[in-house]
Amino acid sequence: MQRCDPVTRLAVEDRQEGRCWLCGQHRRLDMHRRLQGSLGGRYVLGNLIGACRPHHNAIHDRIEWALKRGWLVESYEDPEQVPLWTVDGWVRILDTGDVIRARQPDPAGSAG
Ligand SMILES: [Zn+2]
Image 1 (tube, rainbow, N blue to C red):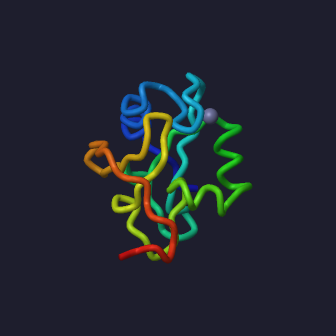
Image 2: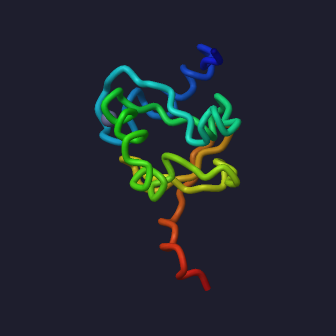
Image 3: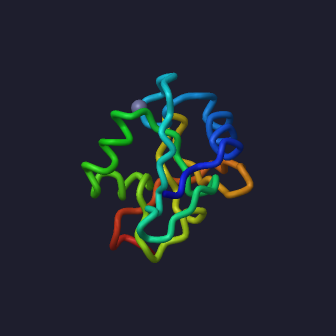
């Protein structure tokens, strides 16, 4: 089974200052892949969110809720391009480790 290498895990924890990005609590973080492993999602910084266990479970239990917030992305999407909600607001995260402020995506159908 593929798993997250320790260097990448440390970089995620560092990026988030050791906090779950969903609740802001300092807890042990699971490495959640936004594009899931079954869809080819890799353990790279732009695809990873550090989430506490309850929130990691919530992401997988509430797919629609997670998709709206960028915690999951669709099979055809590039995780680096999809904004996500964090306790620090909406951001985009890159494989380089950069975190870029982003705007909340428009609801589907209101583009223009
Ligand atoms: Zn949490």
